[in-house]
Image: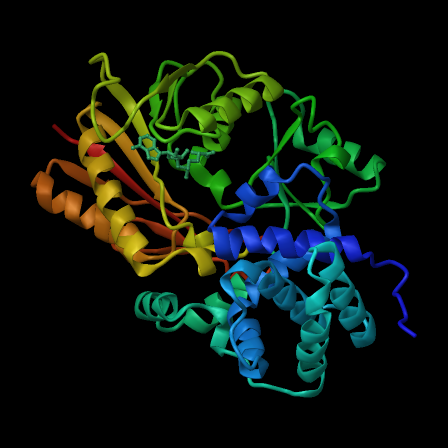
Length: 431
Ligand SMILES: C[S@@+](CC[C@H](N)C(=O)[O-])C[C@H]1O[C@@H](n2cnc3c(N)ncnc32)[C@H](O)[C@@H]1O
């Protein structure tokens, strides 16, 4: 007789396996896979997908070691189910018999009842055997880059990347004070502690946006505590002409508008889909004083020739600083991507520099840990531009100085104040 764990439904495994399959076989990001799913995604399947990706390399090594032959291409959903099953078995507080039985049962849901014996055999073997884990659960190229860039801190970074990130909020100070909002949270039974900045709050436990007080009415946004440092680095005046050159979905732009209402802001992005998301968020938060442009920031076709006082480049990047939130990055990205991003990043800085007025400031930032996308991009730009840019010294209450800027790492010990990995560099145009 099979015993069923009461709180655990077969459907969760089927859903998790299908979502994971979208990521590891089709190549979607988790965000894309979740967005494509029409059924509500249960917290349990969400956890199984994220956890399976966090420990993907160890788990797949172990499954491969006990499989007699690889799973065929047409049955990669079963491969995903085996990964989800192994994750439950090894990393979740689900009794092994329940993890195995429910995963075996999920073969029906995937329309492959013939695979029950195989799934059962693999998981039973893995329940008995203790196979050594792959070091740190990162791909080798990523281990190499992080060890080269952070010889002292690499191990801590690997561990931090495999932990869940806290949910941080940015209170919309144009609408409510952080204290008043925190009281609203407390009334709703949601505990939060202050972050690095007055508008930052960090939740003790994550909640869905539906349960987040005042989210729909624009009192608050969800934003990593590190991403919230941008207004600290570029204090703006009410007359400032700002270009946010990679603006969508608008997190940093809206933060700047909440801090410095009245600035003359232009939001540029190449992606119409992402600009639609920016528009939705703008409406939710009540921001309607900025201009939106669709265009490619690596050329000047969109520019009418009026120089900007401040240019923010929140560049497209590998996202290696956000692995805690997006463990799919470890599975989907390769070393070649980092090179491609670095080329695009340099092209963006070079091109957008031309839109900045003399005396103006450019803030370049990424959510990457890799020097190749950070200091090395700034260095290449400085080499090319022969002395006109002045690197401004910046300093934040957390993180570390780099040659040309500041780096945040996801390794802070205080769980209430951890940030994703971010890089910032501030350049002043002297002539
Ligand atoms: C890191 S995201 C920006 C996040 C945004 N600043 C925020 O805080 O919500 C990078 C953005 O750059 C955009 N992008 C990529 N290549 C671009 C290009 N050539 N020109 C303009 N935008 C680009 C992407 O569509 C993406 O929205």
